[in-house]
View 1 (cartoon, rainbow, N blue to C red):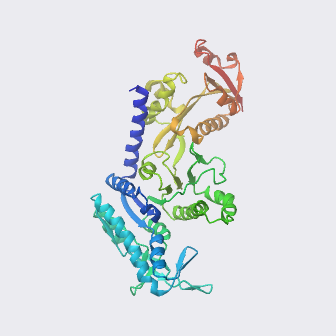
View 2 (view 1 turned 60 degrees about the horizontal axis):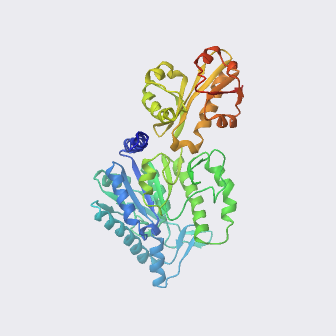
View 3 (view 1 turned 180 degrees about the vertical axis):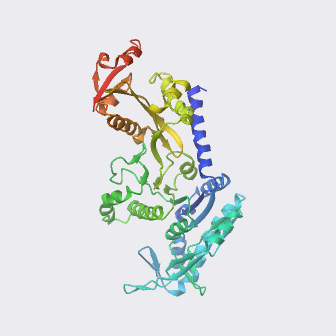
Length: 453
């Protein structure tokens, strides 16, 4: 195996280990769409959830049961309708609704047992009836009144997986049908969960279906990787009217509307204290561990904390920075640098950090009161599609401006076009500071480009 292949694999393994450390003992609430439960890869998802639990995370499951409830009510010829996300039906339907909800939860509990993991179904939700609103009697539909957090925490500390059916009970013991999606969100807020997953069926947020705000992180396939809570209102503003106007209730259009609904719910959850919310397409086998233990996962993440950002390099960062540079040094794009070289100039460097991992670097070397060099721009190739490189360069340009530098320049052998797109223009080597001219080697043939500030 080629050394570069080993390095690439090692970096992926390092990422997994880093994420396991990062999320050890974290609380993860997973809402599972009932279409996933009926899919051929349901068993694979359950196995992945068990792997996640064995990695040290505390897992809570909230399954949807809408399809199962529909089937049972239709079989018994009991009428129902969905309004504002709530099922409206008569009191006689409640025993059947409860039976369907617990049937789905039992199916999940059995699947965990097959993987030698113990799950517990509980009645930890107190609810009250929605009653009559705007002249509409919501009947058996309920709202969450209280969640018994201490009881759930005890179950988690015992090493079990709590399963929440979409049923809540009043103080008097009367059952109500509650929204499983709303329950998952409320539960994640009450438990101060680190992550809330919505495992959906065929729901993906892509630039094919939605208008995307500028600077949004997009995968090479066009999937929206992450949205900050401050970006979501603009995303909704750009898309709500168009998506809600879709009259065709096809599976695809219903999925698009669900995406917007989940974004709104994720925004609310994050602002209420949930660290991150993830919208995942459960049609993909392996989407859960991929989302948890890799940089960009497989779905769309909503976040409020510092998921990724630029900061100054420290001495402790040097080994990771050298790992970022290594592929580019081997390709001859960057000049070789040693640990000693970086330790001598570490104050010149900035890095881009993603969930605690260093994924890019760049440096600003000041030569005189007028000129400075932007150098050592290197971005992990797995992050090359999210615009990290331009962010680093613009950051250093702003830093140079604050130092009253009037010109920044670069020397490059293969990335001249890229720098020209950022506004740099070719200049003769003789225009560079004399100290830098002495380091220039004709055999390398680096081109000089400059940007006036």
